[in-house]
Length: 294
Image 1 (spheres, rainbow, N blue to C red):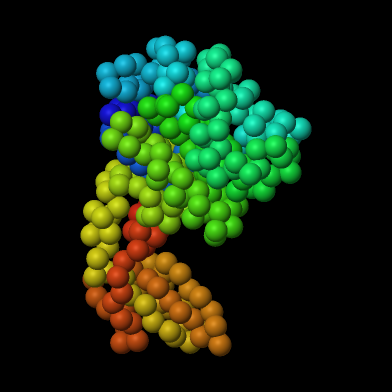
Image 2 (cartoon, one colour):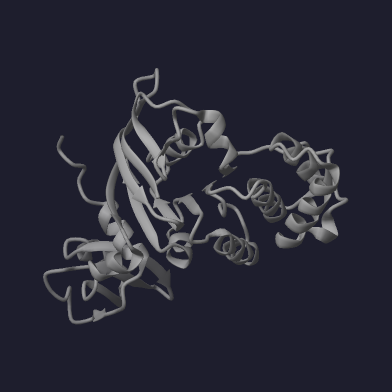
C-alpha cells in the first residue's frame, strides 16, 4: 500500500499546488482525475522523487519514499507527461541505455530483458527504427517499456493517452492493465475520465490542489444514479434548461440539441428520460461544485 499524508507544495511564484494531499492507494490500477492545473503533475513528480514537497510524507509498505530517494528509484517505473528520447537512437538502443541506467550490467541479461519488453509492447518489428520516426502511440509504448525495467513495485504514468488515436488508446489501455498486479501499484494521472472508467478499480479526484473524493468508480456511479437525464430539445431551450440542473453535454444536430444533465430533485421537464449514469457525469458534477471554504 502507498500512503500519502498531508502533502503540501507551494512554488516560488506563490502558486499553492498541493494543499494537504492525503491518500491511501492499494495495489492495482489507481486513477487520479482532475482538470489541467489541478496539481496532478506536481503530485506525480513528488512521488517520483523529482520534486521535494514543503511538508508531508509518502510511505510504501512502511518504507519512507522521501527519505531515501535512491532506494525509491529502485522500485519505481515512471512515464512522465513530457518525456524525451534521443531521436537518433533505435528502440533497441534506447532500452539498452535505460537498462544500463537501471543497473542491468550483464550484456546477456540486458539483451533478454530488451527482447521481452519489445515483445510485450508490440515493438519487436520496430526495434531497429530510430525513435525520432515513431508515432505518438509507438513512443508511449516505448515509454512504458522503459518504465517496466527492473520489475518496479510502483509505476507512475502521467497523462499517457493524451493525443493518441482511438486504436492506440485501446492498445495502451490493454498494456497498462497488464502491468497492474496484486504486488504493484500503478498510478494513472489523467484528465480523460474514460481512461479511469475503463482501467481503474480505485480513483480520486483532485481540484485546485485538494482531493475532492477518493472512492471506487462504482461508488461514484451510485452517487448520481437516477439523477441523469437526456432529451432532444430546440436550441432556444438549452439556456433555460441550465436552471433545472447541471448540463453535462449539449450536442447539436439538425437544428436541435441533445442535452444531458443532472437533476437530483425532479425530472427537468416532460421531454427528458432517465438514463444510466457514466463516470463523466459524476466527475463533471463534482468539479463544478463551488470551491470549499477553508
